[in-house]
Length: 305
Image (cartoon, rainbow, N blue to C red):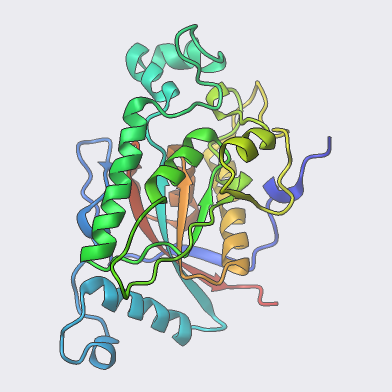
């Protein structure tokens, strides 16, 4: 079967940079691990748009930030596009649990190339009980923050095709109820091949066929051109960070060109988050399983249509 061109890089229309100064993250320890911040870490500060949108100082910080984001897109129309992307790392999978049990050295030298150990299966790993609980905790976070802080829910949802991300996306965002008067965007997640983990060798990163996704996650839609079987994963070689970052750049090119929403969700993997950091020049950090972080990304138009 011919491989879809969607994993190939494309001629750039946008040049991407992470915009600093709006969100704080608090790494823990030398490995720069971060977790979901209260209010998604939005820094409470004044904006140049406040005098028009909030002259009486009655709006919440998230309301003022959403107004600022709309103004940025309006002001730079034709020159740049800004999107707020909530990036969620999937909850703990069986592959994570096995690596934690045996250590990274033994995991990489022995277990990562196997489908399982007779007790656990980690080929296209599902969430553990802990991973499921982490996703439910994210759901509670969104419910509370959207209600009390008016933190905006995503308008578009994208997920890696690997099962642990599909589970995390569903459990994190399904069933959220907002008070009367607050608009709740529809939850219509889309499966995107480019959001998958770093390719090759590790069996936890080889995905199931589209028929499995269709049967077990019927509320998810497939991006155009999604191939039924996994033609990308290989048992040898390893995608480099630079290659992965190029793949993420292609993903961003696609989303920035074809999705007009300003606030978007990615449900993905630690390696893909690292590649997104590399692709946008964000300062480095490492996201704990089952946590979400905000990226404010500017896509400067370099090849306008």
